[in-house]
Amino acid sequence: MELDQATGLRNMNRRKMVKVIAVTGGKGGVGKTNVSINLAVSLAAQGQRVVVLDADLGLANVDVLLGLRVHKNISHVLSGECDLEEIMLQGPQGISIVPASSGMRSMVELTPTEHAGLVRAFSELQDDYDVLIVDTAAGISDMVLSFSRASQDVVVVVCDEPTSITDAYALIKILNREHGLFKFKIVANMVRSLREGQELFAKLTKVTDRFLDVALELVAIVPFDENVRRSVRKQKVVVEEFPKSAASIAYKTLASKVTTWPIPSQPQGHLTFFVEQLLNDAVREQEDSLSE
Image (cartoon, rainbow, N blue to C red; front, side, top):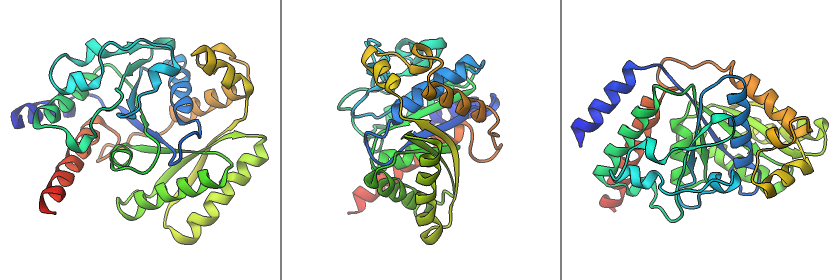
């Protein structure tokens, strides 16, 4: 297993770097997965090679929103039953999707064989993609924190509800105080106006400025748009189904910004770091459980 991991990580280091973006939100129902898939499709339309990892390993939903049929998922890759290419699904604009499963064990419970499989899987991704979007689960579970801290950029999706703001703050607080993350990108989602989006961001920054040492950046204001709901019902992405809608324009504008985000050479911003962090988190969790 150690040889497999070392070989995989060396191979990843020799290849080009991939922009790794975690899309998270603290609270469920804020539209996080919609942001992930519409951003992915918009990036692909702008010439980027994009893969979306459904990191909600317990309640997969990327494939459902896109109307895709899953035969095998990442659990089969991690167990060595197949390679990544066999499970990858193709979505709109040629984006690739790594599907998750319902009821899969969390990352901290992966076996040594599955750990090696994770490294091999991501080393295979390295050659073919420019951007990896990690669509995390809702909440502040260890799994969400692991995926977020392993990514180069953390995009926090928040809507104008007290619980959404509170949960987004809780997520940012934990990632900052316990894991040393300092910069967070904010998407104000499902707002009624540009001003409401700006006020929502102001509410969040008022709290973080008072209690945390973090830097928040408002990267998108996505308006409430009935076309998004219509697209979901059709299992389509709004940027293709209703390309001129207000939400679509916001997603495309966000994608243009993402292409300008730099990829630092060390230590974050590439798949080697992403996988190493996930493995390190898993080892720490296992050691903590054994010591209790």
